[in-house]
Length: 435
Image (cartoon, rainbow, N blue to C red):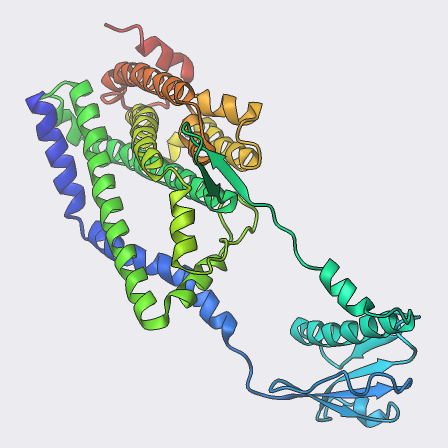
């Protein structure tokens, strides 16, 4: 055990003191924050140049509905002239209305010598649509019809409640639960693949450099494999902890200087992983934010995230270690890792497909299958999962992980000192029989 701790310490200190690790650890939170903030900020910038739109209204019905603003200035003409068609004219776009839009909705058109911006199209459509709606309502000559329609168009939303064992009810927020689950799912996928691949890369490099020949003279190959797996895992936990603290500080600083509403709006503008382009629910204040946070089992999520991460990492890292010990170069590992990578990708899609029905058969069986359970289970937990299912999923995951560690140890013991031709699956099965 002392030898394994020495290897763990070596792996941890060697990787954590690398310049690449230090630079990536410091820069990654700023890069992640920039990915969220920069597109939002740039998207808010608008061209200061005013666009002039020529309006040719042959009906005379829509002269007062098109309002100029800081961006668009409407100028009315009697007819379309050659000057308006010229690309040298100050007129950028021509709006023609040839008939009453209540009878002929296709009677309005925008024309320009260049592609018309969607913002302008939407602005004109909204103003004309409001006028058309008002004219249609007025044509019925029904008293208070406008108020009746406005009342009917009010949005209706269901409030979702959950009863606890004592009969107390609390409001739940499905969108918040879905986004939280998808976030934890993405973290599991990203870190298991990243740090599992780091184990394989490290083993392959040491085997190529023949350093491992010196190391196995002092320790057993299985001790070397376990030390490397645990050492890289500790590096991952340290890096994740640093990123979490730095992101919290960046968010707090941005909220202080830009305002909490602006920061929340920037975060909500990003598509949620696995939720289609679903935006973060809008919070009307701190009370609603606290209510949303309280409706999510954060403690259960945190505990299961750690357990699922450790189990998933141990399962995949042992496999990657065995592959790294078997091949002679990094590029030779594709034939062995591709099936596992595809299973992980399937797990991501299964999690996305299960987001709307976390109690369905796809969600249940994918959360029990050990190669996908670390990913899919995290989507289900915010919506409530029976304790026996969580325990069963963890038992299957850790049982499979222990079995994979044993198999990987047998393959690692032989493959770490094998050089020359590429091993086949058949040869690797033979290695398992060696004593």
